[in-house]
Structures are given as C-alpha cells and as structure tokens.
Image (cartoon, rainbow, N blue to C red; front, side, top):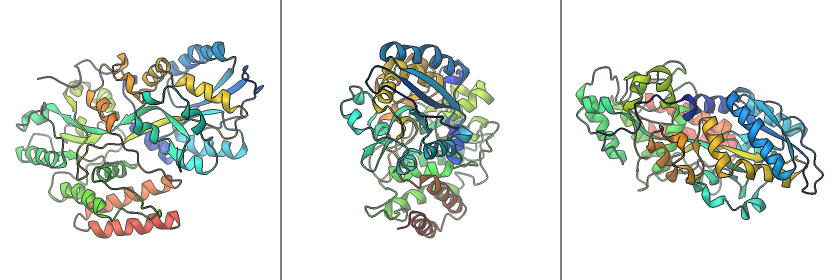
Length: 435
C-alpha cells in the first residue's frame, strides 16, 4: 500500500509550523518597523527596509547574502532587513504604522490584511497587480486572501493549507482502506463511526477537531461553514452564522461530540504530541503543523500520516481554507515603486521557492507543486490549495475570531443547543461590528 509520506523523517523546515505561529500571530502583534526607506524616487535605486517575522538563521543568511544583494545588483537599491518574532508582531506593526516608521515592505500574518488596511497602514497595490506578469502563477484563493474592500493590499508568500489527515495504521486496524479516503461529510462521518465501533487500541475518540488553547475550533467551524456554502456576513454586514448553512455546519460538528465520535476533553495544550500523533484519534482536519508535531514527538509514525482531500459539504464542492502569510507595502513608504520592485523580486519563482522552503511553508505559487523541498510533504496538502476559499476579510477579525471560538466551545458541550449558540454569536459579532 502506498503512503502519502515516505518513511524518511521530515526536515523541520519542510513543514510549516503554523499552528504555533498562527496562534501567536493571532493573539499578538510585530516588532518596530523602523523608519521608512529613502529614495531618489527616480527609479535609479535608493534605500528600503524589509520587515520579516520569524524564520531561522538560514533564512536570514539567504536574505542577506543572496536575495537582497541580487536585488541591489538589478535595481540599485540597498535594503536593510529587520526581524521580529511572531509573539510581538501585530502590535508593533500597528505602532510603527501609527508613527510613520513602518518598514517599506513587510510580511503580514494570516488575518492581518483587513485590520491593517482599514487603519491606513498598507498601500493599495491594484495598479501594480494589474500589470504584474506573475499574477496567474499564484492560486486565486491565496490572491483573494490579500484583498479588502475592493482593493488588493497584500500578495501571498507562503501558506499552511488545511485538509483532512489520517493515521493509516489506525484506519487499517479498524478495517478501513487508507488508499480510499473520504471526500464528503457523509463519508467522513461514516469512517469515524467505523473507527469508533472497532475499538482500536489507544483511540479515545475517532476525530480530533482541533480544539486547543487558541482559535482551533474557530478555524474548524470556518472550514465547515464554507463547505456548507455559508459566509460570515450578508451584504449589509450583519452576521449570518445562524443562517441555514451555519446551522448545518455546527450541527455536523456537534454531532460528533454528541455521539461519542469526538471528545470535549481532547484539547491540544501546545506541548507534546497532538491527539492524532499520540494515537488518541485516527483522523483530523488540520495543517502541516500536525506533521511537524509528529516529526518532533513521534517520528516513527510520520510515514503513517496520510493527507486526504478537502471535504465536500452541502455546497457541493470541495472547499478548504489556509493560513496565508503575505507581503505588503507600507502606506508611509517614500518609494512605492521601489518597494513594488522588491515585492516582485521576492515573489519570483526562484525566490519564492527558496523563501517558502526556509519559512517551512507550502507554496502560494501553483507552478511550485513539484518543488524539491516538498518531496516529503503529504501531497494532499499541496493539492488542497486549489480549493482554498478565504475567510471573509474584516477589520475586526482579531476580535471576531476568539468570539467564534468561544461559541464553538459552548456548542460542543451543548450539542443540542446549536440555534441558540449561533443566534447569540450573531448578536455578539454585530455588536463588535456596530451593525
């Protein structure tokens, strides 16, 4: 039987550690952007600043010794690299934007585009993107993730695409075929029932739905809501979680808990093996951070991890989402054209491949699916990128996401009270948004 991952342990940098990164980025904020760059403004070079978040010493070496010198040779620009950790990122980006000291070009965390654009921190890129020759080389869903209020403010650099992930050995013990994985909500539920009925040793609940100390359940519900054909808001901006798709999505999720196929006590604590890695669950909906968790905590089971397709729900089409980190240009830059040249340089095929590998991310470019650094990445994660639908962009997303997560915590503990939970959630979100 074939496996989606070879038996060779994955190098840590080949797998996006976006679980911890996204949680930290969501809860927090960026280090001081420093002063904006200066330029002659005549296209003959000048000085720019680049702000990157996280990454390894190897990333810094590549940027400082290859990426930026090559840019200097081709453009005449001198670029200073600034670095900050994810834990302080968003707050310091907004502080620097408020004082006009934000770096010319900066990395933007997954759901930051709308909050930053709404505060006037980002430059609209529409004119540049309209004539950008590489636009069609990127996944459309990832491009859309950088848009807000009709304008493009950021472009994707790397991602952590979410899809189904299974333990092949545990499926086999339950009499299931790991080479024939679920494609629909119904098939996913049926497989969970088969695993639970088989009483596989060590499995306490068939499915881990990603409950953690951050916003794991919010991300789970977002997947299901999109798969049900739902959205967050109507045209007037009022929350629509209690609409029919929202009810279908939450009833589907809570049904697993009500019927013993998922366990409210299964919660990732941020340390040690996740439930799938520990063999306490046999299936989950996740990103490549779970594969990295296996590399770190139980490398002997890495070859048993099999990524399946995104599920098809009531919408009738496979849908997934992703945590997409992007490049943007500060609205305060003194040199928009030079900053765009740097963005173009960084997003070229050769440089994206190197940067994605060093960040440990999945490619945002659709022409990099065969990149060498992806050799040991479960193909299902790469294939799922074609089905990404972004979560609706909103300036208040940093406040909205934890409220959704709290509602989901309530729902899985009160699975017969779905409509009340969603009605309360709509009222809370509308209050936050002032509608």
